[in-house]
Image (cartoon, rainbow, N blue to C red; front, top):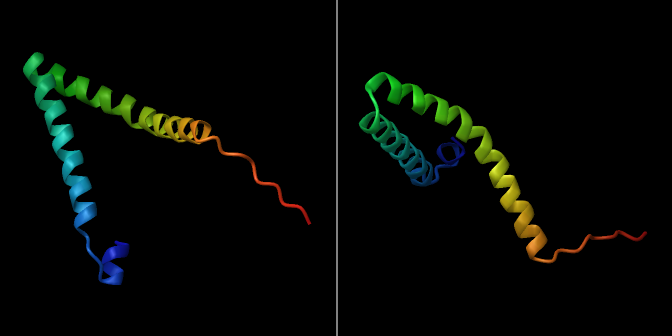
Length: 79
């Protein structure tokens, strides 16, 4: 939306949304292929309910690990 307001390129957002939709469709197809239709859809819904919150925590964990690995030091303000 910000890119549209500024007259910028919206392709990056469209690509990310398209990749996300493709990944979810692959998961649905795989679950249905390995199980029945109803069970595959239920498994997919359950997976998404687990993966979405866990991905937020995993992202924060990766950021913390990168910060620790880079040897960052605290900044002290002396006035």
